[in-house]
Length: 441
Image (cartoon, rainbow, N blue to C red; front, side, top):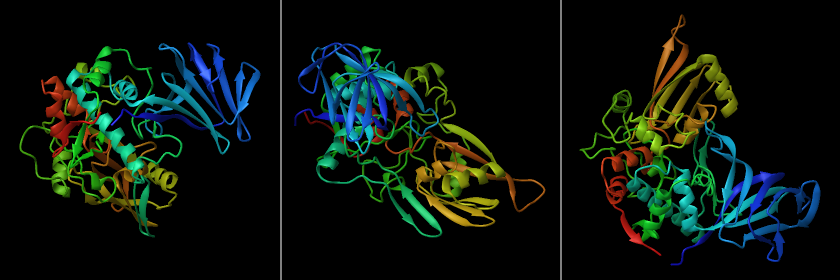
């Protein structure tokens, strides 16, 4: 197998964008371009290329190819953390080709780049490149495996899509990586964080990717779909409890410690006991110096990732549910967990109101409904607090565990394992049971 070249969507569905070329570039294979800033806008099915106030060209699409090893380009106002609590815009710098296309009157800016170059960025964008070296190697293999598994599925015609079951009384919905029509993966958390060379400040990340060149995790001859999240909360979740109802033998629930596993947390009693405690686990760390080496600056604002608490007043919850779900429940009488996964994450939540009762799932649908952005996870217990009226709570207290869906690799847990002297092989086999390491190119 030859190392693939992939297309990464940087900006989608905008009417204009601004970028800067640094070094020598060819536009559409023949025209040399100045080392200067440009703006692109849409005009019908064409793209207008502006230099300052002047339109210098109009084409259906543009491709800018670097002609020197040090040539790169900046794109302004790239949105990162889309729909999450850390969403923001920043200027980012990229190597490789810049492709600009017009689809239905909207611009799409795409970076064409080799897989290993892409991974150097991911390993510096998903986490701090000051992280423990064995952790960086482990994550290089995970990110490579995830990407190649997505490319294999696309090549084999296996569609990724949002899917759901909906009736008058419930909606059970799951969100997988979207099929992208014009590029292979997006540059944000919905696929993998990719911020070009913007965050590459340390040679450790580059060395980790180079040392693991072409290595992936496999299961029964196929590259593993290696999912990961920030913090499992002490117990990872099974694939089918978050996405499609397919059991995947390397994405099973594990206790995040080298010790005999707890009983699974799929009952209210066991989930409540675990979530409302501080169990020993790799991802249960208060080592601020270690966390600074793992998390990027905007991730470091999230300090309560292992155990967290959220209070919602009655009116605030009613308003939020009306906004997020379009349903007027009246007064909320009860939030009731109907079904949990093995990590204690709620798969089905029943909302009982004075006007309507409705059940929602799976975990991301629950997280979206109960937060303006995304609740940290769906592994939470629910306390109903009453005032003068014993039948209608005045507020709801959610006590939760973990940050993210919890399937597969726990990033903070893996980093702690590396800091304790674990090698990348041990880390990978801890989180991805039944898998094996192979070199595919």
